[in-house]
Image (cartoon, rainbow, N blue to C red; front, side, top):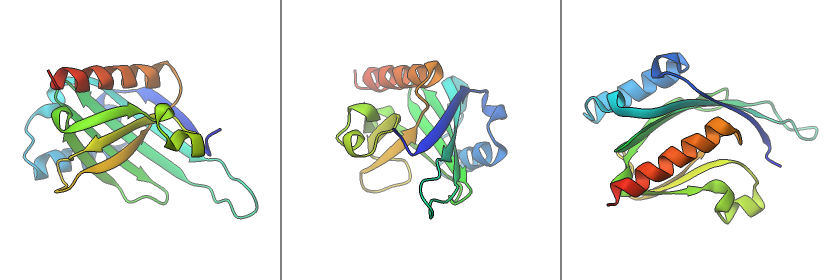
Length: 154
């Protein structure tokens, strides 16, 4: 069982938490990515609450906004102990894996996507975990991401 209670909902980009949409817009402007959000296939927000464990387990909330397009994956995070930031990647530059199928999931159970490869703002390859609730919206987001990544490789 995950240490996090997650809620993932499909939302319009304008309905993301303001700090998430602002971070995404600033990222797009900073890297001159153009009008990539107009081709959004799906936009979700995941609200995560750390389940307090033991005497020293502290409360924490993390928010993530994810926009999937046929060519791009764009995401932002913020939270009570997390600096607000945004990142992006072209599907042709990354691979995507269901976190539950990864070797990490055996040690730290959770639900979401592992995205690895070259991100827009990095000179070296990296790996990022994008949290999604195990619900119909999370499953659909994964499905759309897998298809977009696969189609970009054709």
